[in-house]
Amino acid sequence: MELKTFSMNPHHKHYNTICSDIIRCPLQSTYEAGFSGFWIHRELEQFGFTNMVIHPGDIPTTHKEKTTKTDKVDSRKLARELENGTLRGIYIPGEFHQQLRSLCRLRYRQLQNLVRVKNRIKGHLYTYGISIPLMMSCPLVRAFYSMAQIVTFFLRPGNEYVRLCLEELEDHKKTPCPNYPFITHVL
Image (cartoon, rainbow, N blue to C red; front, side, top):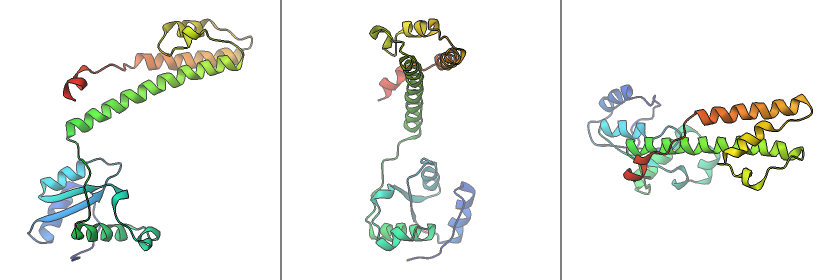
């Protein structure tokens, strides 16, 4: 049954007032997984809620609910499906594994950026007919960097382009992208 409709800030200071205003009984809650992670889930459970995080695509939706997309409609839909028992929660990683996942994603993005800059330099050189030996086209070979440094164009803009790309490559090399040995021991 719907007791009360309200909107609130997702902050722990507001949970106490809501819990005391409603009814002193076990409370269930649910919300759609999104960009904000799982900190709301953890705080709701600390305040005594039985909470479930739902994948948005797994919620049964009528045609009317698809065309009228508002917070009020979505919250009623979630409440209805929670009451029916049709919702299945997603896996909630612990804080350590969530932070480990963020670290792994950052490392992957750093490697992607490094490869992207090297490909930009290679593409620029190929555009002007400067071929790179096959051995040097490997993204991990240091000879590639040395070769790109000695290439000179007849006009200044071409040289400036290569110089700026090499500076960006140097910046990426300064930022450590280490292998983390503790990752293999944890997993």
